[in-house]
Image 1 (cartoon, rainbow, N blue to C red):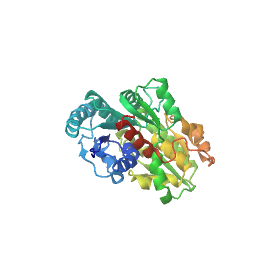
Image 2: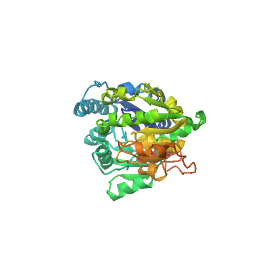
Image 3: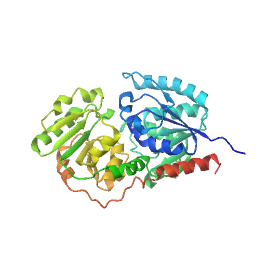
Image 4: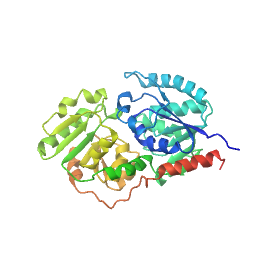
Length: 349
């Protein structure tokens, strides 16, 4: 007797989520009945990466200008109706976004099992990153399966006495980068890549950009490329960084962005996911945050936490990276391990 495939439902809404979840969705199609829901959290940025995905089953429309609480209220109503219709056997949330948190809470309230991709990363400071650190911790408490990128993440969950199963898988981002590596030319050029967007940096964007401009003035041989995030706090201070060797561009398609990273001398960012990608590409990176849930990137000497004070660290960024560092975020087989653990879960093992 042939049993129907188990239904798994992926819920995501931000550009980084699409990048990280896309290889897992594609591979899951071979094993499960897959349903995908885009929450509309990053509507404009979603268009830059939607080509990474198979077709999306549901796309929730959310106004661009809204508060977090409005986003939550809208998603709770919409997701409940989708879950009632689809009746998933497992709802999969990724990382630490509002979309992931809403999906996990909604499923938990409806007694639908939740699984967490990229579980166990911690700063243990709920204000940094805010509000993502709290979301990430809460999702793990609700999850029957916690897929951790590495041993450090798993140990965090063990110490917290997380009730669900803890599985070390590697990070799905690394799977995607390894898939694209043959198309990339990793080399050291005169380009410096800048990305900024985090909510907790909104009062520091101008200060950070002024320092970048001063460094650009002192180094005319370098070309700075800044794909400007639509975050209004960034848009209103862009004039600060306008200079002859600083190019402000629109957000890029993912493969174009990867190619730009691969050709950069170093990178300035407040992103979380980029801290994983630069380890693959061996690119020095100044992280404009006071804390990181990816301490491994610091430990291998690729990333450096600088907060909003970059000036003293520019020379470090210009120094050579150790190309022999081992990647602490995975070997390109995270999706295989996640799928295997789902099969074991559904088989009652």
